[in-house]
Amino acid sequence: MKPPMDLDRLLTQEPARDSAAMARVLAAARGELALRRPARRWRTQAVWLMAASAGLGLLAAVVMFAVGAVSGPLLLARAPLLTLLVGTSAVCAWGALSPKGRWARRLGMGLAVASAAALVLARATPHGPSTLPEWVCTVSHLAIGVVPLVVALVALRGAVFQPLRAGVAGLAVGSTGALLGELACEQDGRHVLTHHLLAWVVITAVLVVISKSLKPRSYAP
Image: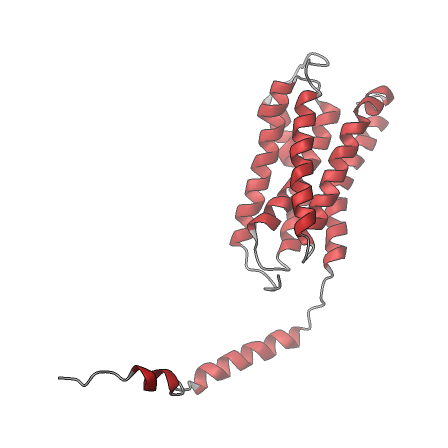
């Protein structure tokens, strides 16, 4: 019969060293240091995300106005909502990438909820008949979000994964399609709720899922 194990002695004794494992760890660390990857400032990445989301939406507005797809009076009428969406995108992008951006993330979520409610309430009655199927709005919303989605994923790899941070970044990405929807769609609030906002939720969820599956470049907070 084996004698009972002395737990105190087991806890105080030094663990056996594996020289081969230590050599592998040291070689991997030296390899990482040899790469000399430049550190990316989170503020710069936040600006890039703002440009890729709100900036892309505003660029679409300029192009649509230039080709006559939207009129000056329509842009003026939608200016308050467009401003709210741009502000939501900027705050969400900043909060998602700021190491100490808890307040900005909460503010961004609040602005996103306010924007969603305003988008629906502003369409109490349709502004005009639609000649296209309703699903076209959903597809276009998701399509224009691909570029900011990629930018957000690259930026988020610079820190350890956090669900709230990824979700807020997704809200910034989804605002791009919301901007486009305000310019290109004239249908009622029910359509906005079931096709525009649904696409916003979908692209946010997609970003969170993909971001979680990617290996971060850094485990900084």
